[in-house]
Image (tube, rainbow, N blue to C red; front, side):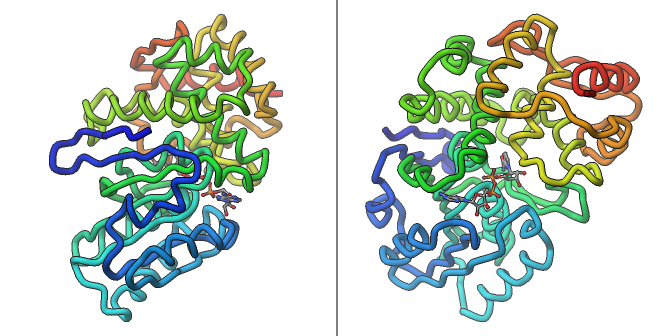
Length: 337
Ligand SMILES: NC(=O)c1ccc[n+]([C@@H]2O[C@H](COP(=O)([O-])OP(=O)(O)OC[C@H]3O[C@@H](n4cnc5c(N)ncnc54)[C@H](O)[C@@H]3O)[C@@H](O)[C@H]2O)c1
């Protein structure tokens, strides 16, 4: 299936098809110099398959993990482009999860004020969410995604077969983002998570999530309003992710936790079994004060009030202005063990 994300001149196709990786040369325009960015945890064969389809490819393999979304790694990749003589008509291809996509996309957005960018997401999280929409960024110290850009890719290739090598815990983390989309926008899709065969219906889950995100981005590309719905679970989630001493939780796991304080009791009662079904966390040991302090660094925190996405009924949402004190008590009540 090919979905088109319609942003006029900046629009692009999202190809979702098992085995599509072997057709990457037909789907992307690779008859030029191509920097392929991947990481050490992504099976090398995926980047090599892309390289084989390019006229002239350089593969850069960064260390796996969030630490690669750094100025140091960003600079190294920009230097590589310069040393290899890349010009405006060349391009960057990300082959990896959200880390590689965010990093490589920011390099493509920055080098020579922007060169073409393509994305081949290889984690479920990046296939359902981060590979489309154009948000690219790196971190500064422990503050996530604080330096970045909007850089739409020229094309996205989603081959669910690459998920066969992905660890089950990473699959669950990706499911958390897909659950997030259904909770705010697709009640039928949420029901699938409650009792459907998720492994059998993974392609459908990916397509459902992409359709939701696509329509939101088409309406509000640069997050002036509606697109904030995609941050559901992220305000608290980023606090959890940034909080010192809470290392070891994956982004999707933090989003799973972050959704719980931001929905009604009745929604939470249906959400918890779904998260448990996917072995996602629903409570944390950590001191919630540490999380709340870390949220002070969250760029979505606005003075003494935050605007949070709140779900009182599955499949719908509202933007709620919430005093920080209320947020604190919600986080304590929903998450503390
Ligand atoms: N730009 C956006 O809109 C957006 C949205 C959501 C999340 N994000 C970002 O995405 C990042 C998280 O992405 P992620 O969950 O994909 O994590 P990730 O990129 O760190 O990938 C997870 C792990 O899986 C490995 N891996 C990747 N593909 C594999 C495969 N096919 N087989 C085996 N191993 C594989 C990687 O090496 C890594 O160790 C965070 O930095 C988050 O901020 C961005």
